[in-house]
Length: 94
Image (cartoon, rainbow, N blue to C red; front, side, top):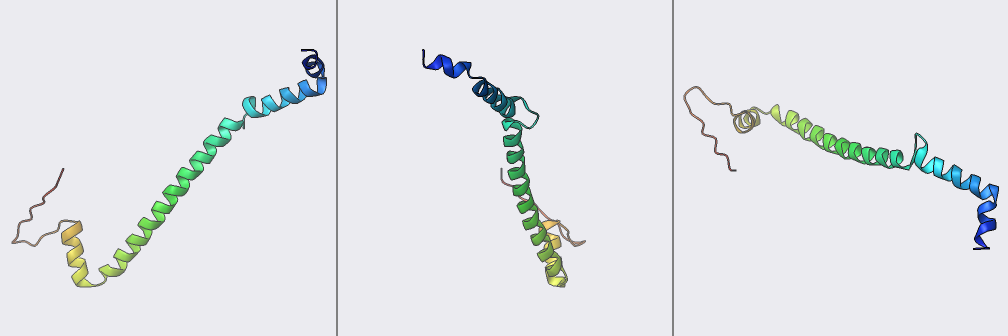
């Protein structure tokens, strides 16, 4: 106890402890805010990579649509277009 008491009475150590606790917990850019922002950044980077992949896929489809055979197949498979004299049955699995 006698060794701890002078340590506690030191004004520089007390000031340093108060400053560090203020910076870590009370300031507007505290450690919780920073960790939250890092999590948001990771989420946005993930969304960005997904969007880039989707953009790439869409560009590939647009390139292939120039071919009329692919255009008809795409319209039938993805958009469920049909000719005037036919019926389409869509089977879905749950």
